[in-house]
Image 1 (spheres, helix red, strand yellow):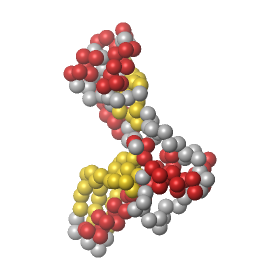
Image 2 (cartoon, rainbow, N blue to C red; image 1 turned 60 degrees about the vertical axis):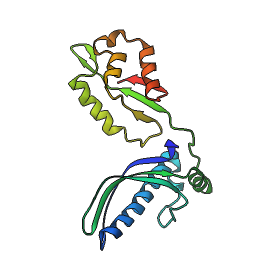
Image 3 (cartoon, rainbow, N blue to C red; image 1 turned 135 degrees about the vertical axis):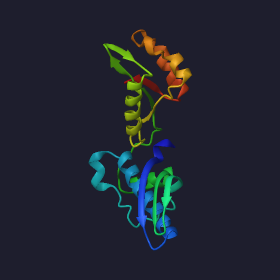
Image 4 (cartoon, one colour; image 1 turned 180 degrees about the vertical axis):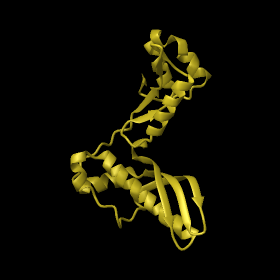
Length: 188
């Protein structure tokens, strides 16, 4: 189901009142998310054949949505939406236009951020934390591979000690990937 979820859809709508602005923003976010999903599922050469979702009744397509970072005023609504879409409805929309699409489950990749300091690869340092934050900003879930990052907690530090990365046992990365439900893990 993750392949049919679009995270981080930003909305900012002004209307006559906050209730109307919220309703309009949620609809706009669901529509924008559907556009993003259709583009993500299809090949770039099919972009011209993607269905126009303007004016499309969204009810059959939206399975659920979550609102995060919500702010509103007397006539304005700003939020970020995470929207999950109905598989059959989305596939039907693409099939109806003759657009080939990807329908496999999204693979999960664990990315363990590391830095090279003085010719040595190190983990869990302040510099590695900056690298981790950069990865976090880019891991939006917008691609076909879902990227997750380790927490960097005591369990992670025990599995991959910062001072032993040159002699890293590949099974340690595999165990860490399993902990995070990832198909694979990489040191980046």
